[in-house]
Length: 390
Ligand SMILES: [Zn+2]
Image (cartoon, rainbow, N blue to C red; front, side):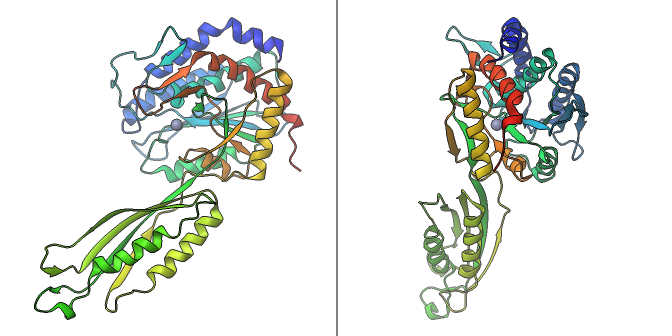
């Protein structure tokens, strides 16, 4: 462990916590862009003060902005990037004024303390710690969005994240870390679909044979969709919402089915999309018809060889430099590591502070993990010239 970095972090513990407190207390969910712009200004000022050439980027009017920048543009090495989001799931004021607090067990509380403002502060102070020792091997980029928690127009933002990550040696998404030190090497993709089944209505007593039951047609498809599962490969299909029919004595002529799937790999997404196309191209009941739409897959990234190599490298640095070893994990929910990985750069997620219960009022982060990870990521960046892909 680099002693100069360790001493710098130790000497600035109070400043680090103050920044963390201020960022958590600057609340704002993605539904409140009016609060996210002042927050973006705060981030821009902080990163600029640390030496990062920073800008606030809007993808649409009145839509949550990004804060992106680079320090050491003219340094010789290939850049490295820290990324993440500064929106939280909580509207401003959900837990009263100035909600950040640290309890007697060394846990920090407050909306977004873990998910994921702690991770942004880690990146800020990693840059400051490296500056303090005159680090000048490679540029360091940062990219913070503020519509990660379910933004309605995340596509253009995700594209920018991909652009910023493009051409980097490694990308670290500073999301919530599990308490057990694991780093995330992949996350599941999700897509949803909606099918509308058309039948022929008829009186269920007088004209039974003239009717074509849209619900029965849908029922065949529900089972078929469920059977597209591949538990071994982590493909989970979920027929989720069904609606149809008007009254007991009439044959239903319409039924809608909403379903979703979660996938570890793009190959599985392609297989299921192909099978859905085949499934919806014919009906079991003559005279019924089907139309369907599918959303684009989102949120995931594959546990590729590159990501595994990056994880292994980081774990080696941890072992060599006396940090707690980091295991790896594949997570079910999505994150912006998805947009990062689209660039082809090796990516790890869950690089932020360690804690539990994000998206709830029980959310907490282990305060010591803040200092531990500023040290750890500083050392990882210093060793990045040893990271080689075969
Ligand atoms: Zn998050």
